[in-house]
Length: 121
Image 1: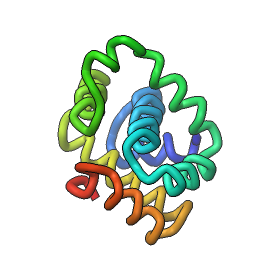
Image 2: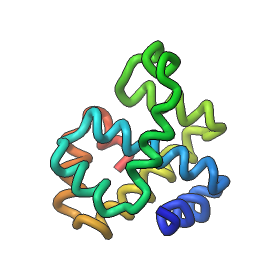
Image 3: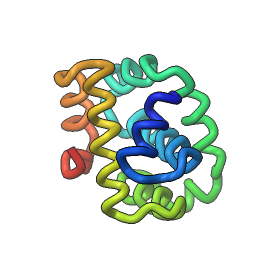
Image 4: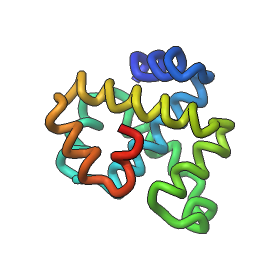
């Protein structure tokens, strides 16, 4: 997890704490909306990912009020102080990291199998 947090903080120009929260939010979204076997393979390659997902889902009622999907993720990331260009940079870096960990084909399947995600690839 430290490697991914460091990459996001550096490449997207965001604080490490924000990067860690962002990872949890995005991985939680992928787990709920993407192809589960491929997403789980990615999560399994990131030590600490499960804890980050659990920590990011702590908003309970607030998250449920916003609904689901990509728009809810965007709203949550903006609440962390990220702008649209930072969100795009984060997404691209996460996808690069995913390709490094599980390969381009599996990462491609996650991107194409998750509604709305291809616009960030």
